[in-house]
Image (cartoon, rainbow, N blue to C red; front, side, top):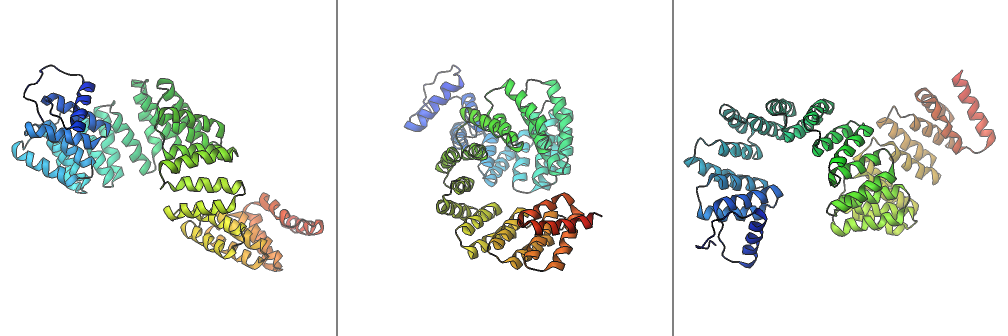
Amino acid sequence: MLDPEFDDHKEDIQSSLNRFEKMLNEDENSFFDLDTLEQIAEHYFIQGKFDEGLKACNIGLEHFPYTLELITLKAQILGEMQQAEAGYELIENAMLLFPTDLDLLMVKGSLLSQLKQHEKAVEIFLHILEYAEEKDDVYFRLGLCYLTWPKPREAVDMFKKSLEHNPENENALVELANALDEIGKIEESIPYYEKFIDQDPFSYTAWYNLGIAYSKQKKYEKAIDAYEYSLAIEPTFASSLFNLGNTYMNLEEYVKAEESYRLCLQHDEPNPELYCCLGASLERQKQFNEALTYYKDAVKIDPLWDEGYYGLAVCLTELDKWFESLHFLKKAIKLNETNPLYWTGLADVEAYLGNSISADEAFQKSLELDSFFAPTWVKWAQMHFELGDYEKSADIMLSAIDELPEEAELYYRSAIFLIKAAQFKEAFHFLETGLMLDYDKHVLIFDYFPNLETQKAIFKLIQQYKK
């Protein structure tokens, strides 16, 4: 593929890329010098276009077979393509010729880590440390190795050492935050971000990552400030816009969330996650018909995106289109059987349609997946209450209490159902426990007993307890 008549001048990277892609598409011959091929391969690697990067490496190695830069880059690309064994074999062969080359050793260590040979990888990185001038990158690789082991505490130490050697290593900063998050100490990443920002206040990615750290701590107002600083520096940074939208969703500020998602859509490739988030922000504003359009867009882009089908089902339920909702719930569950919300949604629809046996099965499946979510227990018991099966409702509440013994509402509901089942002694026991756990929640009892005389009798019992 090399033309013997070649121009010796340096091309700019874009014209080189255009010529390279034309050569591939039209199966032409075209000459590229070694430096240009390295630039092309590295460009594709950085862009995540690994197939094209691999082709550039292969073309280069056909004509320059002992070029270390192309060998190491090809091995890294193979690793990214989940072909770590092939990458490792390539490095081993190269090391027969260049046994002490540190770049080859670095890639070898990373590939060993990917192959889950963590101890060997650590040994190699520690060896490199003795000779490497830029030790921050070696410590960074050690941190990644420990993080995938997984040994997050050791990873934290390595990322901190990386930052000691180079406080401007932003990748180490991000991974330090990830490792601290894994050991439940995300708050310790904040001073590192602040120090980094003091040195480089115009790093929009640093502000963005600071926002993520605050979000993980549920410090949403501070997260918003960080994302907005990021966007003041780079208004088109889609990741900050997206996470700003998520933060507003957590604060239940759905109009602002919608605005952020719409701006994100202007600067990012349309994707199902973004469409679903935009749909959810509209759904929370009760704009169900408009929300439907974005959930449809999500599943159009990716027909396997289960969250899109669930969003469709929720909106259709709100629009009283129960049979259509049932269809999409079943579709979501077929794609993802482990999401308890999908099963609870299915149970709600089956119950509304009068299919109590199917609803029971769906509630049971939801609670098998997550037995610590009180609203599911309450909905299930309520279904049987509305069917007049008060003892079944009480039994469901007793099972719920076994799982959530500190949840006062469950005791009050047990008391309600037991009173309805004429089991007054047992009812008073649960009422008393509910009053001990959370006295103020007793008001929910009166919703179930509209008769004024009954309310007076219950109020009298509650007052006796208060005394």
